[in-house]
Image 1 (cartoon, rainbow, N blue to C red):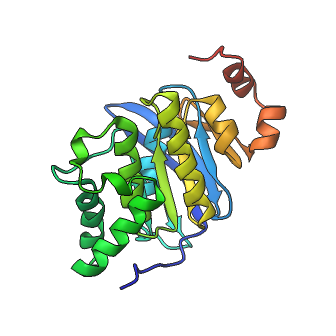
Image 2: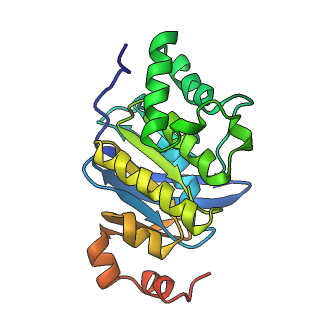
Length: 239
């Protein structure tokens, strides 16, 4: 069985707003994202990056505005998301990967083959039978990436995937992200790390206090930010 795929691009946000507890977190965001480049949502802590990503993914619903996938309001099925702190089931690494395939309707024997292949792609085949919860933070994150990649998503959302990792683990996770992107999967990722954004981004969405201040190719953003907020952020002057 192949995982069902569908056209999902462009992903369009039109005047999207979101508030919680009386606080406006996302303010009138309008974007159109295609599937050909790696998109990094960049901004200081508290800028609204994670909330914006959860709105895109469908975990949150906007208070106003619209989100459409290839012109349709229905949440796209051909997507996956990996969080800053991955959720590991109380079972082996390979069973964690296979579980997502089970939910997708894949047969047992096929699940095992796909899960094994996915773990091999992220460099963890040798830890397939190890309990996932005893793995290091970086290894758990790669298991989470394998679990998502095995589903063959057209778009993968990554919410600060290396925020709590050491440099070595960060390098390995970034390597896997690059390979997932090279396989044809669209990457949308949040980070507040300028160095990581430089390494991974093809285009930048710069968010400040819930508003999109810049949406531009990464080369232009890093060479000459157009907004004072982005310039201040790059100088370390924003919190």
